[in-house]
Length: 306
Image (cartoon, rainbow, N blue to C red):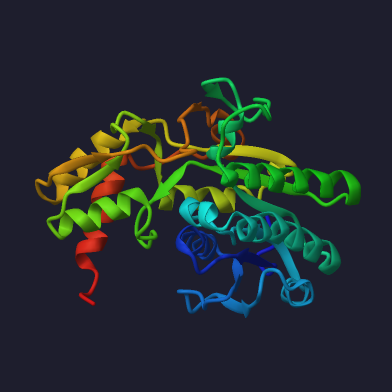
């Protein structure tokens, strides 16, 4: 684990997952510096307002820092499709900037936020961290960007001796999530009494992980055993998008479900094994999908009216 006096940096620490990671790190007793264009939600966290593509200011912001959690990215896959070149700049070049800033500022380990979407570049339907990628697959640009970012981490380790850890997130949900995420969209529409529109026939499966469970893995990933290792952070409970809509309808109120064309390049779910995170980090989700969803809906209902 890190020295309690050592500063832990979180790029993108003001975003959805990032803000929960900051919560988890502060709760674990760490000093935290948020590297983001927006201020952090937590008064206890330091803030460095930085353009992630500005090498010099990013390097300055990481001076005196130990481990660096890199979460800043273009995470909305619709935005990635709308402007692929910009997404490559933010998601791949941005990762290279963080790795280089860490090297120049002599920080501790860089811990990369990746995604189980990388497994769309595989042939197997049951996967773990040892599953090999295949370039001859149909996948999303976002998945390619995360694969490239993972490879950059490994390259900085082999070329410059810079340690890293990769955390491949399951699909997160919970308080503070972006409105474009499917669960958020469903909850907000259901609360307005609107129909829930599904892309495709609703049979596509997803395994959602409650964001507080996901964030809880990050202090654990600071362990020495996690150095130069990759971990899947996935729940075990797969549900279909149709089941998701029906569960939201039951918890919020009966709503109509409609269907539209499938989304191009959509992630085809795999059975993602998280045994390594459980065995090496002691991590496993504390919430079922429905209990996490109930907590999320309660958060929406408790929000002040805008």
